[in-house]
Length: 457
Image (cartoon, rainbow, N blue to C red; front, side):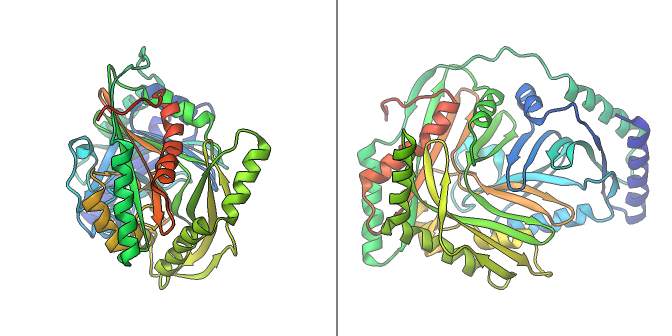
């Protein structure tokens, strides 16, 4: 790492900070062909890891140079305001702009459970060192926030010391923890919640509601998040991977669902709803997929999501294009109906306006949105935290990518929390919905080396 280049960009940023009397971001980016994001995350087990496709982007961020936390129903607008102000007049050396990554709670009105406390309503961090891999190769950027009274030489020394830590992760002898106890709501009690939802649908209160399950494992030691991500990466198929650390907690997942991506003003997303298991043989898998494509109940559920996404984006986009019929998105243990959607973001709108409009989609909340969210709040029985909520990144140019945090786990010291849900519509059968959640849980349970047990409570 070139110390002179770092010092120069920090000095430039300080001059701008003095001129404007406010903090300014400094970024210095350089090629790093020998560094691998997955290997570094697996070794450090800190910061964040990201691996998404279409477009392909893998990132590892270590250290926190700046954190933005916002609360309440206007959290996304406030996040956008603070980030835009911070990025104004950024000093950038190289082809990569500042990048912020984080996530938010599914429902900011839901009381926060203790295990979710470190994550906040909305929490985004500027990594001190960020390694990214895309079609342009591997690049390492140093990101700092420089204030009017900052010392560029001191910032350079600190960053070089952090760079040495990046290259030399601490040695550890992680072991696979044993399960002391597994707690989950018994199947008949969860299916009774589905019955309650079906009664509300029959009355006309709801068209759809997504009910999730929460599985809590007590372990005899802490899970190795790096080893888990490596196992997920090895079998990721069409899934996007993420891992975000806060204190000693890590929220990670292998989600099939993108909420919204923006590249140079072009938005992409997809409607994802309607599920079936994978087959053991190719012929069986094909037959299951064909039945899913022909299933009226699953098609109805899927079309609700398509219609809601397109309506939510009205007034924010132009040239909206939706595929005429869904195709199959095949994952390790489950396959879904998926309809690609693309549009051009209006000049007066930003990516977070789209996130605000779409979350929660009917694929994770329900319809009508407010009624379904209220039903979840009253009947689901646990705090979703960041599960089924947006996680993603923003850069200073308006680009970004947000996933829906599904097929996910919250790892805490000596505990692990898993989450999985399914959409309840007219025609749903409680036993079938329970089996669907079992299929969705299986992929993460295998990656965590936590296999299904009999529920204790």
